[in-house]
Structures are given as structure tokens and as C-alpha cells.
Length: 493
Ligand code: GDG
Image 1 (cartoon, rainbow, N blue to C red):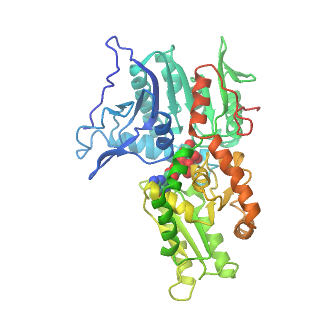
Image 2 (cartoon, helix red, strand yellow):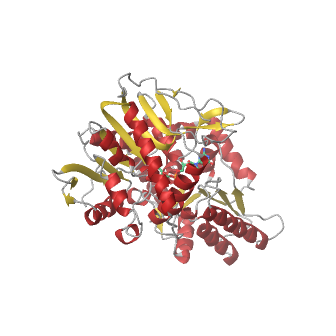
Image 3 (spheres, rainbow, N blue to C red):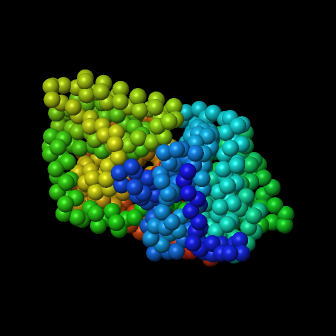
């Protein structure tokens, strides 16, 4: 069984000693049979890793191996990574199935992403989800110092803020949702909508990626809880307690991407990438977890039609789609994989002559250097989700274009579109519109393409992950930072 690692900061009198506690479904490490414990992949870890690099903090999360799995990684996760102490919340295999694969990923995830696939609601799964949230709340309560800041992350842990407040009213609690918050009509379908709203309102600050998401939550809170609207957010209960509700659009480690992009080996590799796919005239790129929200299928369809219509030359075009596996136990993810693989093989099989395989599909994770080389090699980056909280890939692509070239085609339904309005914005439901926009991006004159990229790069560099974290933590500490002028830093809703 995975060891429950005790934070060395935990005090003897029951209360902890951690001044900053991060609570997320997963710890920032994962176990690999060959390498042992290593940094876990993913947007949340990569963002928080940068934020916590020089900060003492305690991270509360699940280690990734069921506690009752006989093959569980020996010894459990390390006690600390750099400045961050790790505290594991053990989960059994049945709890992972009900709380994570089930309630989080088959009820909440699809509902919060515009109902792209139908949500399934099971009372037994919600029951487990609530128990797991309570366990996370107890673990956080046990390590936090008096008056500490606790930063709870994402849709799997929305009940934690209220549970934690009940256990430790002295704490300052922030919650950040990495995915969209749905409009009222959709959110209202969830049988436990009241518990979710009340859970989130336990925080002092409830942060979202976009103004629209913050507005949606305010409406839901008005409908399902005892709140009054205020300029800053909401006044909750009696006597009223203020809760800040606003957008804090997440940024990336822009300087790190820039440095990697300036590395000579990475630049050499970018040239080699183009050679590897036959020195095409046009290189298109997509990078997404293989998730049905990401619009990988509509993107392949649009490109295939352009190739079949002759608008793009199959012999002079290459499209690389990186789509590492994700949530492979969930049925809808098996379906999207089958669908994408069918579309790729159908396109490559139809397009001739012999030796022409314009679509290169990589169902495997890439090391970060390879990712940046791909970003640099591409002429056009296609980010076409049907719905996405933010989408870090769009920002990583832009930060990697130290050459000032490259075009970004970006779905209107990403949080990133709210900030990156100089990208080529598309409606991924409109295949014809998407085809026209891809062609326009390919053929845009160099000077205006470079002007777009320069504007995008400036925004991504300024509103990076540190800007995001400082803004959020300042709000939680009660000293709101000066809001960003064009990045949704203030929610006027
Ligand atoms: C959630 C929200 C929000 C992808 N493939 C590889 C790889 N990646 C990295 C990317 C990027 C991250 O994973 C994906 O982040 P996204 O933002 O694109 O999407 P989600 O995973 O759905 O993230 C999203 C985010 O949280 C943060 O708040 O933006 O809306 O859904 O960093 O580079 N990294 C490596 N190899 C890969 O093959 N090394």
C-alpha cells in the first residue's frame, strides 16, 4: 500500500505548520517502473511547479496508485520535491473508479464542456466523490498553519472549500477551476448542483479562466445558494461573508519556453522535423491530449477535405497530430481514439500517390524539447477545441516562436481566445469556415503574419504563469493586485 507521507512541517499540537498548502487531485509526481518517481505531466503540474519553485509549500494530493493495489509503488511518493513537501491522500481502486473515472470524468467533465458527450450521473459515485473530497479537506486541515493560505484546484475537488472552512475557519481559502464553468441551463442538470455551489462558496476567492465562466458561476450561486451580488463577487449567508469571484486567466512558463526555443539543439531538431516529414511546403501541427473536447476529429476532417479538394497539395502538405493517451479507462475516450484513428487511416489511404501520407499521428507523449521543436517547425498551429478552459498549447506555441513566424488558428471556444484575439479565430463547428481560415492563415503575407505573432508573443510573455499565481494569491491574501488591463484580470460581470 502507498505510504501516507507525513509533512515534516506538521506540528505536534494537531495544527500544521505549512503557510501555503496546495490541494489538487494528483500529486506533482508519478511513478514509472524504470525511472521511479518523476515529475507528472500535465498543465496543472507544469504551472504550479513553476509557481512553487522558490516557495515553501505543502502539496496534498493522490499519488496515482490505488492504496489497495498489490503492485503499488514501493514506499509511496517522496516526502518532498525541492521546496515542496508532499502529503499523499490514499485512494482505493474502487474510489478512483467512482470519484475520478466516474463522477469527475463522466458527470462533471462533459457537463462543464458544453455537454459534448452526455453526462452520466450515479448517486453511488457522488457518495464516494463526497467522501474523497472530505478526505482531502481533512488532510489539508491537518497540515495548514494557523491563518495559512490553502489553494484548492479544479473540478475534482469542488466540495473541499466548504468542508475545509468548517474544519478550519481560520484559513484563507482560494479555489481555482482549470476548466470552463457551464451556463446555468447546463449546470442545473447536475443532481448535486446545490452541494457543488455551496462547496465552492466555502472559499474566499473562487477563480475561473474567463469572465464568462465567472459570470456563469455567479448566476448559479444566485439560483442555488443564499447569496447577494456585490461588486467584487458575492456576499454569502448571514451574516454575509464576502467571496471574490472573478477571472484569473492562467499563463505559461513563457521564459522557459523561450529559453528552450533558443537552444541550438532544439532549433536543429526543428529543421530535422521538417526533413522527417518530407520537407513539405506547408507543415500543420496539432498537440492535444486525446480528449473528445479538443476537436481533433473536426480538425482532421477539415484538413482532409482541403487535401481532397486540391486546395492543399497532398504532396506538399504535412499535418502532425500529437495526441498522447489520457483517461484510457473511460469509454468515451476509447471511442474518440477509434474515431481519430479511423479518420487518419482513411485520409492517408485515400490520398495518393504512393508514398503520400500527409497525416502523421503520434499517440505517444513527447519530451518537452521535442514539443518545442515541433512548435518551431510548424507553419500553422491548429488549436480547435469544441470547449477548453484555457488551452496552454496555444500559448506554448506562441512563446516558442522566437523567430517571429508561424500562425495560430484558435477556437473561439477556448479560454485563450478571450486574450489571444490576434490569432485566427474559428468556430470548430463550422467546417467550411475553418477550412477558409486555415487557408487564409497559410497564405497571409509575411509582414501582417509577423505583426500578429509579435502581438500574441507580447501578451503571453506579460501574462505568464507567475503573473497568474501572484494575482490569485494576492486576492486570497486579501490584497488584490492591480488587475491586468487586457487579460480579464477584473471581472466586470
Ligand atoms: C486543463 C484544461 C487548461 C500535451 N502533450 C504533451 C504535453 N502536453 C502538455 C502541453 C500543455 C499541457 O500538456 C496541456 O494543457 P492544455 O491547457 O492544452 O489542456 P488540458 O490538459 O486539458 O488542461 C485547460 C489547463 O488545465 C491549465 O489550466 O488550460 O483548459 O483543460 O502544457 O504542452 N507535454 C509533453 N509531451 C506531450 O506529448 N511533454
